[in-house]
Length: 399
Image 1 (cartoon, rainbow, N blue to C red):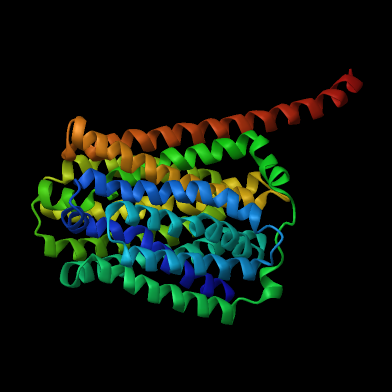
Image 2 (image 1 turned 60 degrees about the vertical axis):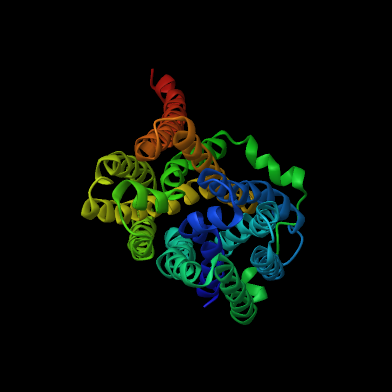
């Protein structure tokens, strides 16, 4: 029940992160800014996660984890209230950044709590269960938020997310046991950040940034892509986002189960599949049926990478720095989101244009795959070197 309570919190946070994609044109029109400028609301949120994750993780390191989770949900709820009341683009951007501060630490601490509640061979499945809240947010929260924005204005969506935040806070307070959640690491920021001295942690974080940047180079602008490239009506976007959400649910389940069986193979395989989907999506967006199919495949490919990327960093950061590493990897996902949204805006305004976004995105994800592959090769080479060294003394004795 504690893991499912964390899933509810993830649902609320996932809804506020992703719902803006379905409101981009309404926001741009109402606030009198361009679509790429409105897209920076996603980059601003993502950068807030990147900055907030290590700072809040360190600040709350001596606080019991349940108390920390409740404090983070309070920040999230108040931030969404400020979004609903924002009178201008600048204020909305500030409110989005405030909301985002809780994001990385919530998922970082939550992933550690979820993994600690199960046996070692079920850790990836526990993490993927918590991340199901993100996938359900995209399956239900984002289409519902888009529908609300279309019929009642974009502010109504943020009011609805405030209610979700209150419900999530109540559920966590009720079902997450303080004893099960445990205490924070209790170490200083300096000690926590020593985890960044581990090469494979840094490589894992880099693979996350570039692997996921490809997803958001496309998904940030999915509404204009579907309307201006594929030719769908605005009313159809919510239903198509539902398909994306179904894909995310499937990808999250597949990623969690297969990562427990073969974590390295799933890490490399999921990034390869995601790059392939993005590359083919560039051709598919010109045809309605193919476009809908590839929106679903994008959701599957994107979230099949989450569990292997998160578990990779957790496995490389055993000990006191695990909560920090977990939070930093959530920050890395969001740095990738910011990078993808920013590069997507450049491609639209100064590059080859909206229709070319999937191909640019595929190149970004291939960069993440290259970093992950290098990390795995380096790790295996080191392991084989140790094994050879261990055999040398016995060989010399035999001679």
